[in-house]
Length: 440
Image 1 (cartoon, rainbow, N blue to C red):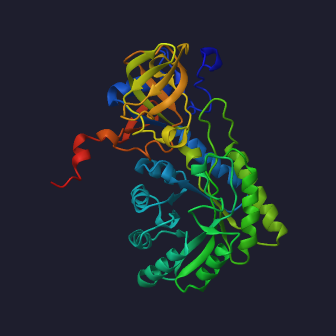
Image 2 (spheres, one colour):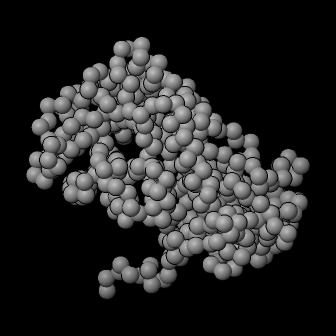
């Protein structure tokens, strides 16, 4: 691929955090902080988040619902970035939380979320996790299968809560949006939820209604992630309305709104996304003569994805004449698994020469012992050299969350930036951390 086929990086594009700039030294600036100085002080790789960006996106969701005058709740789908400081930040912004494991529940509680505003997900919650949730006073549990109904019924009978545990039934609506197969969740052949077409969802509703210790609060469905088209959400509302009937007060339509990973990506705005769902609920439920339910949505990626980026240091530049130039950095699949898992595409920029002309097409390679450990293929960088700082934007979702210790690598720190102040909210792991669980 030639250089003239690849557009120069635009740090003002939606790929980068809101307010990203270039200072007089030519360095990339995020949240008022020089990323080169952050790299020098805290090392690389490192995850950097623009705090004000996250706040603005959270406010956009909340305001979009308020302006439409409907009962709602916005849940942070915390699997995207289960960071204690992020839970604390979004709890202060008035959001609720969606957790998918006992560990995420513990982090949400530590981050200050009111247990009543926590929703517990998972297609195979263990008895210990269900007990943990009930003992913590979690507001709602999203039931995923018949075994879980029986399991939760027994635990609720034993320990409460008094008056029964509020639950949502997760429905598999048979809707398959245009996104990667691995992040489609609403199709008929899915490990998640109760099938709508085969009658399992209706049977689950009746089973919960018969339960003396479980209270059916509503329905839940999630059709997938990184979605740009909004028509499937209208179909989702239509599908759920047929099951709703009387007594369904809550309709959780999941999340899935896509973000820009590249300059050519044009995802719908938060306002358009919310407007589509609210209008569909009002239309469909109104035509069916049903009460308008409280609408819940679960944004994760669209809250934090573009607010974060990852910084690396170049360790080598390897040119294979007539074939490819590899730029090797000090991270890779241990801090961003998405390119290897989904074939996800990213942009990149030289952070210490962000105003430089991207004149060299390269492939950014990770440092792991895998040929598939390639972070960005065929990207134009400004004359990359050993010691340069490489930045990959749009890594705020599922970077830290999916990080591993492959090859014995210590996981990177998480740094929050706001008003020119950088604060470490997750420290870098040490070798002592890596060995701490070993039993001699």
